[in-house]
Length: 361
Image (cartoon, rainbow, N blue to C red; front, side):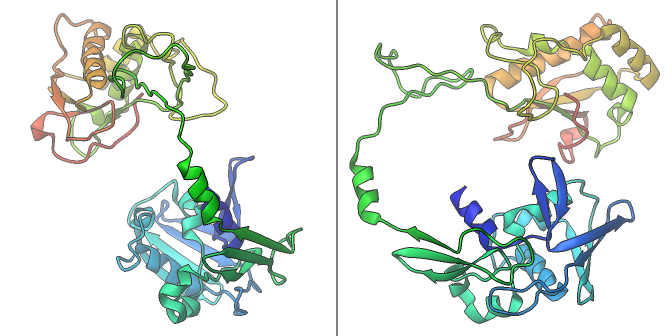
């Protein structure tokens, strides 16, 4: 987090994410358009934006930055963010056009990530590996010193946006204090994960303080839309969602520690024990509307015991909701090793294709 914060003081991105309003705002690009169903993006750059070494930023720098992030030479762990960019075209000194291989509703958020900060092509090529030590950006602060003892930032007077209140920031490296801190014995902790064994053996000592918290992560079901089958019909997916009583998916003894989520992650979302989507009557109506004729489907799940149990309950819930006397042709099959998702529903033929699709629950 510290590195990310410092990076935001030195660099700028094409767009910015405003956490308070949950909206994307202009950054180095003051305006943009999207067409062809989200495949073509055109960004219009601000004029008079300068890098710390004195040269004006242009569309060529944006092209260089994005192609550098996509390339193998940089070996960036964030390369996947821009793997969907098929081409980058400079239309004008201040206009650049990007073509995506497929529409990506999160593309602007990717461009707002600090790893997508625009860098000057000439400085990167001239400094080579030293660019990591003395990077050049367009941000409100520029680096004037960076060595083993300290990092010094000074306010950039030609910054295109509001000038910083601070004139200078010094970050001191104190390895002797770090060595002293590392010699202090860390307090013992015991971590317990739902449905997993404790990471240390034995009972919890009486003098230990136990802290419990409910995480904001969610388990979910996806439908594989890369294969033909009944899951291609929205009415079938709705029948499955409304037919599953999610309260029955909660492991025994975990009822007071598990809540139902309305979305993947929401800090302002209240925990709920009410499943507002569960409606067996509506599920049967959607199932009839979908024309489902009993085709065999496969429910993939990870090896984790809790996920396996939840997946079995999903199949049983569909049977109950659809008013059938037997399992509604949904055999259980383990997914690839290391799979993290709760389950993936797809047609049976050899489970080919991707396990992504429309989120069901």
